[in-house]
Length: 438
Image (cartoon, rainbow, N blue to C red; front, side, top):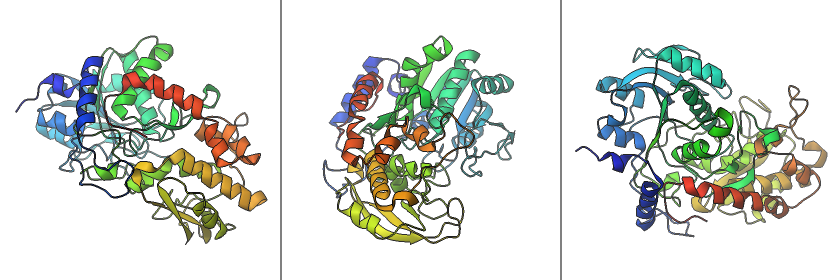
């Protein structure tokens, strides 16, 4: 059966509102406020909807695809492999982000430019590419349409959304259309945390959005197109289409869907990791291990000088959605490699209730209070003007200076409430999916 294009694509505010109303009326995968899961919600990603329609959205186009191992259909086959095998899509190139198209590279690395063995398509190394470089790759590949299909994890410092924005800017320069094959936000649709400030933008936060944006990549593309492209490129995209997810709503986390989890990166092994990541990633900006080099990165956090008191203090804080266990681990690489670390493991009790930025604030405040001079912020020698990595992650020096001054977690969280409310109001016009949020 051929789907009506109006069912597939978002082309106006009216169509977006209709989808939102439909989604809001559907039953949720989790009972509001409950920790007991209901049956998993059937969800169909944008890629599967496009494939079921014979890839008609890409018919007659010269296509470049920005994707990685998460760009799959529900049969677990790569969208690029399926596009090429179908004969219905003229794939001129693939643009690989951090970790690469096939996912062979570790954090902060990529696969390089090469010819893909399976499809014979040229794969361009797009990780860290400037807008000019991305435009050059598009022109070299001869594309007139750029497709984005990557599973995001909902945090501002996860680099795939900035690869998407760079590709969008390059598409404006190249006169190319942009198509997003949308996927759920695995941590749900609630925005949380502090706003990025212009002075602290970087590759882990290139524009002014909050720490946990609560949007799908399709919604983010609409937001970027409406809020940033004209200022940065002088105009918006000539064409932006979002092939929407069917069945997802804002109160559904990944565990509430019937989808298979594919690791978006080597240190994002489970949906639980994604839930805590918007908070525990802040430990990248400290001298504690954030669990890299273990089987539970970002869920295990600790240091050789930490002890049982940290878990005890956090357990008394009633942090929403999570529980803390005293834990010991030995990283096989990264910080404290080969050393026994004491600390905590964060366990998920209620996925809907988890507030990643608050979790990070609670853990940082407790660690600083307990360990004093042993606790330190990571400093980057390559950036003398902005030496603290945690400032780039949080968007400003505010969290770091408040923690150093002895502020409580409630005070840290309170400091970003007004800017968060402003962001929520601004993003409203770009949202595509309904359902309650907390």
